[in-house]
Image 1: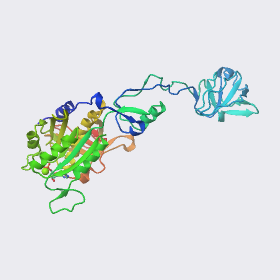
Image 2: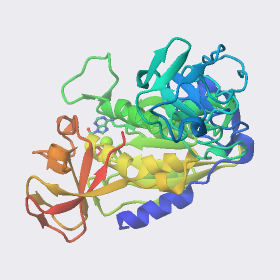
Image 3: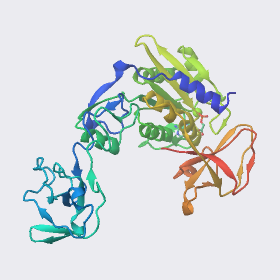
Image 4: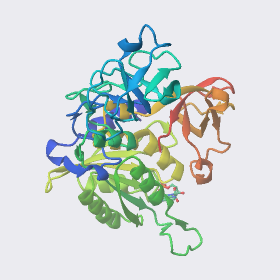
Length: 413
Ligand code: AMP
Ligand code: MG
């Protein structure tokens, strides 16, 4: 049985990032949540010209430096509001009315707030001593033309999109979003909308995994459930492989008499790289690679356990990172984020496998703490509602007393 770290390494090595040819151009308004496939360089300075950060008056600092209390500056006849073309140069002994975003007139180097001046007819006096350069946004102060604006591999959100738009860029090159097919296996599974017979359950993994896949930045292709029959499983698998870069099936990977996933994978010529991992929950995990000879594509297959929480823990621990790599995100995004925090309750594990205990990470009184749930059954979907973190207990570690520190994995989705 592989350790969690070994399994993670194998999985990430199986994933190859996209070829140049698969990148595509999208309009900025379609770029939200996509991963940037180019280093984006700004062609303009940020800000593009010296401008005012306040509504007030632009002046030459040297005019007032030594006698700010007594000097009266003439107010220039022109004024500059945001969008006004560059105003006339500022003469010595003058102040010019300026509004936030207005271009600083030539010669001016400081802006005083309108609250800090006293107007006397056509001139003004200063109420407080200005600081040299105050309330001026200098051209190129934030970024210079030719400098890197947003890095390749960044998943674009509102902040990046705002900066790209401000640079006048309306189209960006992004990676193709990975397509992830999701299928459930099990004779007991029934689709939503259909009534249940005794012993049957609704196929919840289908929905849970699709939601996680989308949140991880990929396109989910839900393919429904198949019964535990090798032939039906094979057909569904082939459909999944044909449609996706990555396939997730749930159920059918244990050692039960009706667990056919590995057998069928072997029958269709998949290379199986992982069969089980020393993790709790989630031990029966199958990871395989299928080389589709016709399309020349490589598809990675994850056979996760059917127990709903096991399926989710497997997703959080291994599949999210695989999707991040496949999406073109940098190495730092392939691994979960960890934080060492105090646990509010005792934590117990059997010690035979690396154990993940779910709960709430919160910042009570400014200090992060982990509060585990009460019931850890991997079949208990109710216990994962609202969780945002997994405490990790290493192999051979059986007990962490309350108020001791534990490594906690932050759940990004
Ligand atoms: P398996 O991994 O196939 O042995 O399934 C383990 C447990 O998970 C069984 O109780 C199944 O009924 C349950 N299970 C399997 N697939 C799903 C699914 N798609 N949705 C909800 N529960 C499932
Ligand atoms: Mg099953």
